[in-house]
Length: 476
Image (cartoon, rainbow, N blue to C red; front, side, top):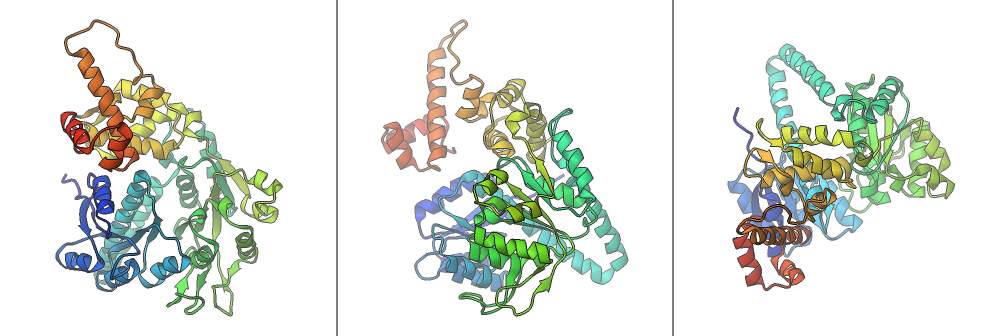
């Protein structure tokens, strides 16, 4: 079987250093093109097939929104994103309305979060292409397509079921999944609590696919990522001219989720003013798009999630008590990964199977190292760690030496003394290993910025370059 080609990403930024840092971060997993301006990027798009465009907002000449608006007109299938250090709501609204952007990301960015977002964008592009193919097939053979769609739905349900929460036999997640399975069949609002990265959205999808609404849409919104005005527009929709920048009418996520499930992540981060509007929509079963004179009836099941202790927030007056009881018809808590160490190995092996060839495997010392770490970032951090080790591995077996220093130190590997029988060159090898660990960690912290790395380590840029070459870290 021929492996799929990596998704193609065009990064547009007028800062050369920003372009280089983004290229180094993304080039191992994507086919990367870069441009220093919107005009240069449009010329490149005429010559290359690009699936995802990530653009800065404020650039000389053509702004990010203006550039992406042109991309939307000429290449509407391209997934469009803005990566900017500016958070003016008018820029965000214009980007969504005029350029049809999929995500508005803020600087400074984190490599793991950016990679996850881009992988999601690549998946969206593939789904769009599949949808177009299905539409063409529908014109010629509706009966065959109906059978294919039914089969795809069944496959999606199986992949998004409770087994998607990978776990070992006897895991604390078993009780959570059993309870969720019982709740799924009842049209009851569910609140999922737990730390970031524990799989709250995965559990919400499993509840949806096990419910009578499984054939309906599953719509997701992160409430903590948007200011009130934009969140209200996203959820309830708006009419053209409702506010500055509203150049066209937009259907909100409540209407998009009609007949299905609406998943509101980080609902505890919303303001009291917005909570009033959300409570009214849930109580009345209808929403009023901004600028519209009439309400619109909606039928959605709400699954909400938060990393906060909402009961404590209610007691402190930070979260409305009436809204809390409206969204918490049933509360399900996902324990952190450190509370279920038996799940680390099957999750890590599942990640490896999803991103590597069949012969790739984790050595036993590597598995022991993973079990010893506390995983403050939970499953998301574990995923990044395994994929990083996979990128650095030179053979099918992944050893503990491929993990970041913080993971190795938890297992006592980095601090292990030189014991046993000495051999020629042993001290030199150990010193080189420690140097490589320090330099690699600094390169990660500073996103490959060699000037900052050299300053932190007390080296000149030339000295750092020589050490990178000597230690084989030029590609780090």
